[in-house]
Length: 267
Length: 333
Image (tube, rainbow over all chains, first blue to last red; front, side):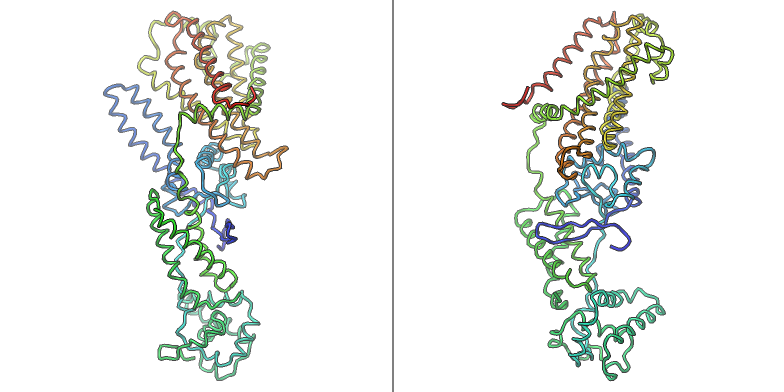
C-alpha cells in the first residue's frame, strides 16, 4: 500500500499477504468517536441512576461514579472482544485490532492493550502513544507492543476493473507472434505493471495528462520492440499501449480465442 | 510463472465474489456464528483464494488483482482464526480460587520486588519523618494527614456525628476508582522496563512510611492500627500485586536471561498479568467498602481492638488464600 506501513503475515500454507497499518491520525479519530460514545453512554447511565436518588442519593451517586469508571475502561475492552478487534469508532473508520502474527486476538491482549492506555495517554491526548506509533515499524503504541497487537486499516478493496484484461478486443500486434514473444522477453514485470495501471486508471486522469502519459509509455514500449509500421498506423498511443498490455498480460495462448468481431477495437 | 490473466480471472472470480459476500455477511453481524456448512465454505473459499493469491503474486503486472486478493485473504484469515474460539465455558469462581493464587505464587519473585521497592520507599519516609519532621508536608499529599496526629485523633474520637453519614457508598466508590487508577498506572508503567512501576511503589511506600512514623512518633499507634489495618491489609497488597503485574510485564519485555523471543515471552506473560490485575480489582472493591464503612469509624463508636482484630483476620485470610489455595500436589510450599 503506497505511503503507509504494512503488516505482512505468512499463513501456515505459505501464503503471504500484507495489511495496511493504521496511522496515529486515523486511530486518534476513532478514539475521539469512542470517547463521544463513552460520554453519551455515561450520560445515559447517569440519568438512569439518578432515578435511584429517590431511594438513596448516596447509592445513586456511587453507582454513577462506578458506572462511568467501568464504562470508560470497559467500553473498549468489551467491544474489541465482542466485535473482534473493533469498537464503534474503529468500525466507522474501518480499523481493526489484530494479533501481530495473525493469531486469534485473545481477551488477555485486549485487556492489556487497553489498560496500558494509562501510559500511552500521558501526558495528554496520547502523546506517548502517538510518538510510539510513529516510531514503531508496526505503528504500535506501547499497549500494542505489550499485547502483541496491531491496528490495521481495512479499506474495502473492490473488485478491480478487469475489462482491460478480459478477452474481447482485436489486437493487430498478435499477427507477429515472434515480435510479441520478444516484447514479453524484454519487458520487465514492473514495466508491464506500469502500463496496466495506466490503463486501469486512465479515466481518472486529466485529458492532457492522459495524452502525455500514454505518449511517454508508447514511446518507451516502441523502443523495446519495433513492430511493422502497418500494425501501428493510425493507432493512438493509448490503443497501442492497450495492445501491448494485452500481449504482456494474456500470454501467447490468447491468440487462439481472439474474437474478430464488430465489437473489437480494430487497431 | 506467467499465467493467462483473462482465463484465470474468468475461472476464479466467482469464488472471490462468493468469499467477499460471505465476509461481508460475517462482518456486518459480529455476533453471528457460522454453522458447520458455513465454516466449511469459508475454509474452502479461503484456501482457494489463497492459492489464487500465490499464483497472481508471481506476476508483477497484476497489482490491482493482487491487492484485491490480499484484502480478501487477510479478512478471511482473520475470520478463520476467530471463528469458534470462544467455546470454552467460563468458570469465574473456580478460576478465582485456583488460577489467582497459582499465578501469584508462580510470579512470587516479582511480588517480592514490589515489596522491596515499597519497603525502600517506606524507609525513606520513616527517615525523613524522624530526621526532619517539618518536611513531612512535602511527602504527604493528603491535606487531612498534614495536621498533627494528636489533633486528628482528638477530632475523630470526639466527633459526635458520623461525618460520612449519607455519603458512605459514594465515598467507597471514589476510593475504589482512585485506587484502581493508581493500580492500573502501576501495572502499565511496567512497560518502561519496570522503572515507572518502581517509582510509583517507592512513592507509595514513602507516603506510607511517613504517615505511619508520624503517628507512631505522636503516640497514636493504636489509632494508626485501628485506622489502617481494616482496609490497608487488603489495599496495600492490592497495590503490591499491581506492581507484581507491572514487573511481570517488565520481565517479559527485558527478557534478561531468557532466550525466548520477545513476542513469545509477552504471549506467555499476558494471562498472568491479566489474572493479577483482576485480582487487584477484586481486592480494591473490598478495600473500598471496608475503608468507607469500617476504617473511618473510630473509638468509642468502634473499639480499636475490634478494628485491629478485623484487620488481622482479613490479613490471615488473604495470606492463606494466596499461599495455599489451588495448590497442586507437588507444588513447593
